[in-house]
Image 1 (tube, rainbow, N blue to C red):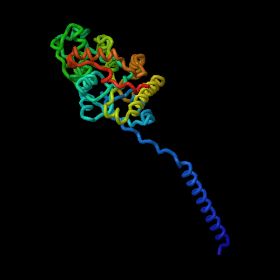
Image 2: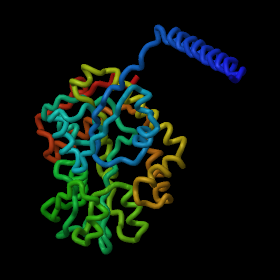
Image 3: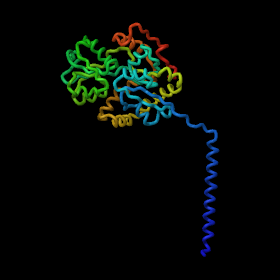
Image 4: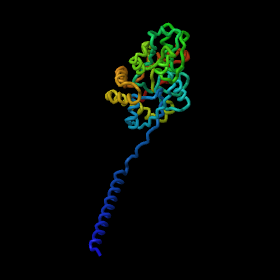
Length: 332
């Protein structure tokens, strides 16, 4: 019989016993250190209405976990047919908060139970009318077909305002409601003479030599606020701190994007089929417009209501009352 076998077995037994002692001590230590520790609070789901599939600072912040660090599980719902569809989504209880333009005012005016709680970093109206080759001015659109976005949305309203201020009416052109269709695709089809779009599409199509900038809505609206952040009355009542944290996360998202421009451009470029130099030019236009206080311009809202009444989108009997239309306590 091998005389070393009992010795080996004893050593193994001693080693195993030592392991058990260490493991037990570690477990006790961990249990003691966790005693009294607060469990992580669950994230508050926030169903947010958005009008387009995003690719900018907010989406970068979601990927970086900014909203989660503020206790929010941000669930973005894209209503690509425009603000009218998104407002209907609010009315049906699909969303808690949202960020878009004039249909929010129209919704409040018609009795929708929401409040404006802040502003996106860009408050103004950034819709633009771009013309196909051979179209050099708004006046050239007389008798032509124009893509105006979704009826009841900010793009359609902007087109009507621009036409009116150039001496034209909706009867002088044929306005087609293109809803969520890409303005670039619509214009490239050759079936329309002009389309309402945003700056990035304009920069891309002008670079391609396929379009001309005819008008910017912000040049026609004067002192006017177009964009808003809202929350439903129910969500404000049940989750007031989530509203506050959302606004803080929103501000943090844009502050980060502003100071990490190359990262923002790379992120945007990974999601849209646009050259990075065009994306850089887009942000060079946008960033100077950012107001990271997220404050609301009350005079601008009042003038927006007035313009919407002139466009027959809000009844003339409606009175803008900041005390019932807005809840700005979350912007501290």
